[in-house]
Length: 292
Length: 178
Image (cartoon, rainbow over all chains, first blue to last red; front, side, top):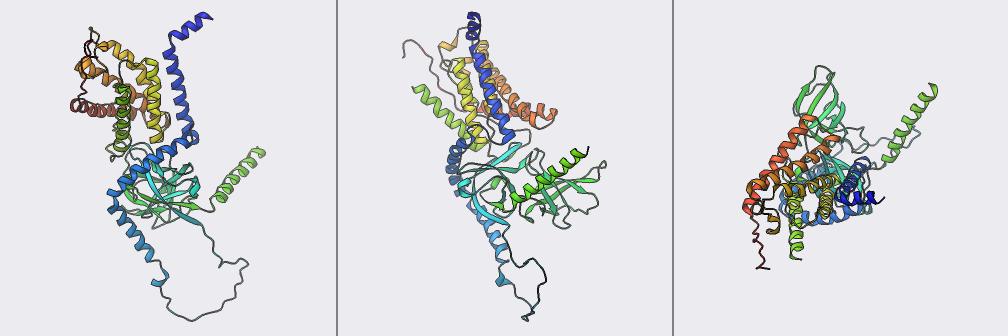
């Protein structure tokens, strides 16, 4: 026993090293798995506070660019106003609706919340963006994030009371369902961690006609994003002879280095859609398993 | 006391540069990710014991991590750096032990050639482990090797001008002075 204590005492530094290394690796790997590590929530509040102060200063110097984006957004919204649209005739027609469902009732599908970016990086392979809105402002996981001009930015992955973390499109684990604006064919948008100026679009069949510069938008099938918002434009077409699918490089519409004000978009039906999807898979898998 | 304040100011400055400048500059190339904050650990005084050094390394790494959203990544790399630092100093100090004459490692106290070896090897250790951990979850082996080399070189290119531009005026400690 005495020898053991002596042994430990002699190599105490090395054992301290082993212990601390285990702790830090445990932090690292539990973070990757669950997106939440020890003290991350508390640390978020502290780093968020500091980041916010810094960003306040930085925003002062970048107002011009942001004003331009907001002006473009306002312009597009003004064009949607009912005042700008006149109907060609004023005659009315009474039609008896035979549908059993009241199709005139509308419901809200997406809810937009404004947020400011307080920290942002593009240099890593896993880039996160920090926003100054958290769970007390109604932000929750899986909400989509759009830039001030409406282009797709990322998905919220973690929230603390006053701040939230967004997994940027520039993250090697990010996958977004997107489609070509012209034809509506859809594929998956990914990133290979190499060039932050180019995203990858996979899964588009070669039968679809594609030209350089074709706009890519968020697909109707995305659970998180509202459909039709711009993602980028086709910058390079790689035709792989071995498969029937294109590999496209897409130039992102959002400038990830200049994010300032963004929208956090909540899909109000997200929980229902996700549950249905999960339960369908479970049901089919269970049926398969019991028949074997 | 003065020593502690000096090092605290230093760590705040290094963290600011790391988080708000080096991580914010537009992307240069996928292999190049400059990093500088670990210089703080290399500049710590000789008088810090190896065990305290490990704790300081863990704390510094974790603060960087919480800013960059990668808890444990930089902390783990810093621990390797702090484990090897005492060995390196032991090997590289001149015969007439400068540990007793100077406060902390610098080109002055270790002399330029050994100091460059000290800086380069520990930078290499730090970056190797950092890139290794990133590579575990993503990337190919060639990328891994090139990235270690490229980011070590770019970091050294930052460190050496800093040493030249901001020489730390370390007075030669004698019994007479203090």
